[in-house]
Amino acid sequence: TADLDRIAEDVIVREGAVPSFKGYHGFPATLCTSRDHEIVHGIPSADVVLEEGAVISVDCGAIVDGFHGDSALTLIVGGDEVSYGAKPPGDKSWKQIFIDEVRGQIPDADWARVHFLGRIPYDRFLALLQISRVHVYLTYPFVLSWSFLEAMASEAAIVASDTAPVREAITDGKTGLLVDFFNRDALVEKICTTLENAELRKEMGRAAREHVVKTYDLKRHCLPAQMQWIENLAHLEPGKAAD
Image (cartoon, rainbow, N blue to C red; front, side, top):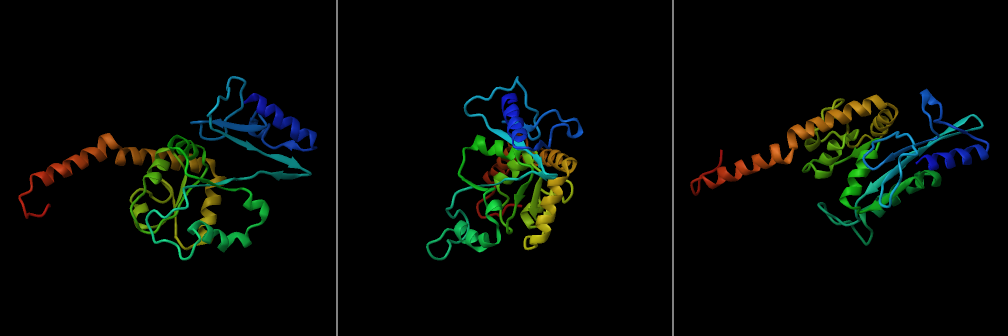
């Protein structure tokens, strides 16, 4: 990854700009490069060699004419099909309906930073959770999804809707931040707050993992509870309700 860092610095300087990150609070490089399981702000190194199949997060910033430029990417994972709710009206997918609703309000430069990844392999999904600075989870009252628990286990900083199933796992300000499902401005504010506060992200991520391991670990909690439930059912007399 040291080669990537050298190339990035050469390009930035050649174009008359200055690397933003290098020297910032002592940071020694032009890029932040985080490979596979590394969360964020990894330091490029000649000892880190990228092999085929590696997942790498690259963060880069430059100062041009006094303007500090940085960017964020929005990654949306999942297929276009309907899993739980009703099918959309007409021939369009829900994804396309919602894109059509907001696309005219989003400048082309910003829209270019939104990426729909479709379905991705499980290991890549976990890597994506690990490098995400904010995991946004919006849901109506429904079952708590496995992907949400995976995000907590990956120490992701979570901003989620303040709805019944989410409150089971998220304590506002401790294991994540909760926001009213319909309050768009509050959602933007909490996402920005989380992006701008590295210490908050770290604290909430650690607390989220601690909670999910303690409460939802398969072998130590969920599976024993499931087996006990089955055993209790097996010993019920016919026609008698369970306690």
